[in-house]
Image (tube, rainbow, N blue to C red; front, side, top):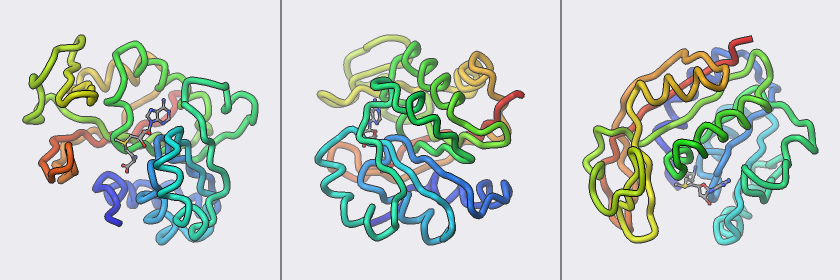
Amino acid sequence: MTPSLAAHLSLTDINSLSVPNGALLDVGCGYGRDLALFRTFFPDMALHGVEPSQPAIALGSPVFQEIKLRNLYENDVFRNCWHVRRRERFDIIFANYFVHLFSDEESAEVFRILRAILKPHGALILSFVSTRDPHFGLGKHLGRGAYEVRQGMPWRFVNEQDVRSLAAASGLSIQILRPYTETELVADACDRVESLYVVANRDD
Ligand SMILES: C[S@@+](CC[C@H](N)C(=O)[O-])C[C@H]1O[C@@H](n2cnc3c(N)ncnc32)[C@H](O)[C@@H]1O
């Protein structure tokens, strides 16, 4: 199980928050490859995940047990108001290759939702697929910056300004915004994915 490069990059930023007993939420955590890395480096943190896909949850089930995942919210981040009902707040919210699944409007909503459940001193750590990625412009055009790069695989590509606008519109200040190159499985083959790594804090 190989953790994402974004998770590796985030270790220093999470450390600098100095919340060894804090709460970390991985949104769209899949089968938990990044949560497993966080458990190795942050043995006392309360780890939580959000994942609606039952196949991913089944695959991740032994991992979630082994790392003593505090909560797995088996919900779509937009639905069920899970965050409002439970009134959980997190020191760190991490989401690797999650926001690129959504349209402009949906991404803005994701930012608003995640900001609302971030503690005031907390950090939102995200990765995006960049407009510099070689898949940009391939496949059916679905809307601004969005293409169906393979059948049933809609990706929305962003540049630095898109990320700054999304953050500003939801009351978040960008602390770190930098490009990086990940090697990822894309349609069952290893491929280069040009990405953006982002750390943002609440403005208040
Ligand atoms: C590209 S995968 C990345 C998985 C994981 N972050 C990783 O890097 O291994 C995107 C994940 O987001 C989940 N997802 C899709 N839509 C979601 C939603 N509306 N709310 C929460 N998770 C969602 C998918 O089921 C999938 O596991």
